[in-house]
Amino acid sequence: MHPILSQPGQDADDADPDAMNSLAGALDSGLLAPDARAVPATLDAFLADVERRAFRLAELQLGHREDALDAVQDAMLRLVRHYRDKPAQEWTPLFWGILRRRIVDLQRRRKVRSIVVGWLGGRDEDGEDLPAWEPADSTPGPLQRLEDGKAWSEISAAVQRLPRRQREAFLLRMLEGLDVADTARAMGCSEGSVKTHLSRAMHHLRDQLEDWR
Amino acid sequence: MTPDPDKFARRARALYLEASRQLDPSTAERLRATRRQALAAARPAPHRFASRVLLPVGAFAVLALATLMIWQPLRRADSATPQAASTAQTADADVDLPPDADSADPQLYQNLDFFDWLAANDTSSRSTEP
Picture 1 (cartoon, chains in turn green, blue):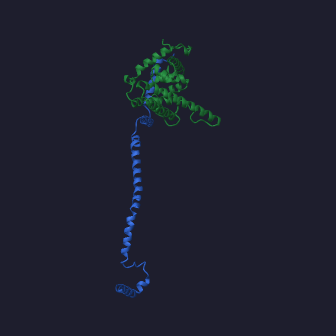
Picture 2 (tube, one colour):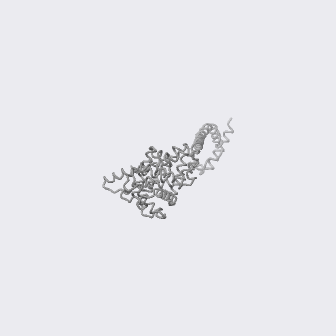
Picture 3 (tube, helix red, strand yellow):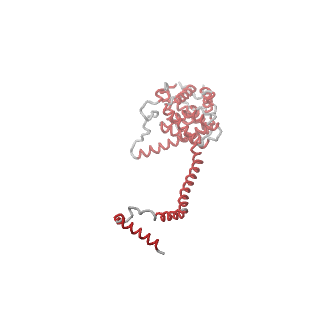
């Protein structure tokens, strides 16, 4: 039995992080086309390849379309300005690292704003009160047009409920498909920490997404 | 029963990739514009050439024009003396001409016969003087 196919009642932290990463490695080869793993030759091609996924990832974490666009824009600008002369192999962890930090900044800023608004007796329109994965506007979003929109909404909501580091590990390693070293670099931690965070994230998600059994 | 982690992860990633592909056109266009803007910030733009070359050239041209405009009045002032001399000569030549009707005394025109006679006598008396 796979380690994360644990018996009921088993401690979530008991799962083997290495097994989780071997699973992620298998997914890397299974879901992505061979050329998708190739490093683009130009920065333009790299950004064109990554921009939509970066937006989705930022939107998933921030729950706000405009904030997500701001975060992606800032990450692109910083990568081009400061790291365009770096080898192309380094662009991927650098970009995701910049985006991760920008998302954290925006989350902190939003939290401060929420506290201030709370003191003033107002209501933060951005939304701690909003559902976890509902877009801020009431018009049908693009996800609604997807055949699997409901499933995506469920997993998005579950991912948003994860602790921040676990969420980052899951998004970068499992969804974006970075290898352990690049994930560690983007997260600014050791590879062992990545494995631990990912293992815990998977267990939390398993508990939350019962319909996926 | 526990979820199949392999199935779960595959499904999650497939949904993520599909959601990224299915972005609405306005968001996709904004992302493209953002990328172009970021890349344009890095490469030397044509307006930088303009600011580096055309601006100094234009400034030099304006300076040269201003110098010319200042220099020309000075040159005119220098050549004003010969012009004054020629003006004086012209004034002498005007003595032989009839007086201007606007500036002349009206009595001159009322007693033209008298002044004709006076002028004739004056000329004759000058010619008879030794």
